[in-house]
View (cartoon, rainbow, N blue to C red):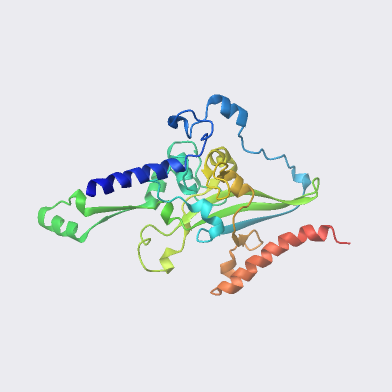
Length: 299
């Protein structure tokens, strides 16, 4: 019975991992071709990110820079969060955090910043320092006091993964294009946010507030995010790219800061200790941007 159970488990894992590889499933002649496109198929697809049109400074009649917090607990934001467990899933599906970190490690994303104004850069060592915690168990201290060294089995390492990312911070510009006569949005930067790695497993809610791990200048990451696909629940054969999800604003975010005369202060800095009023202030900022377009056509 144990052998049968083991074989059944392995078979189920194999089926689960291949069931998500929907790419080229109808054009494949052998199972090995599932998930792999030929050069001819790639040429026919012409799958490239949609280019931004040129917008001159004189074409902008109104603009407002905003910062939003996209909380991943909300169902509409799940495509940015999952999958967090990649053991039993195809290699073509990864979470947005895994896509960004892999591109950074592989050198595809060379510029990683420490703030939303893109003033200071972070190296791979800096990222490792803020996403990894190395600690010694109590047994290790006892061993050190007795023998003068600590064995590797008594040293624990905790690394922030996609499971720990609880939100994304997004910086974008709302602007009114007077040539097109419409209000548009251009995404400028994105940052995964997680709790401090030193307190991520604690029960202290105050220390588990998500903070940005790093900032990416979004135009530099468009090609990478276009190649990375997210799950489409309505048609698994046509997955959405992360570039499409973000540019089409297929997510729900709450404005936590706008550019202002007070040094771009955050909402919680002038509406303190009142979550409801902070949410209402965020909606007021959103409506202020929307009302500009409506007022353009009021007579």
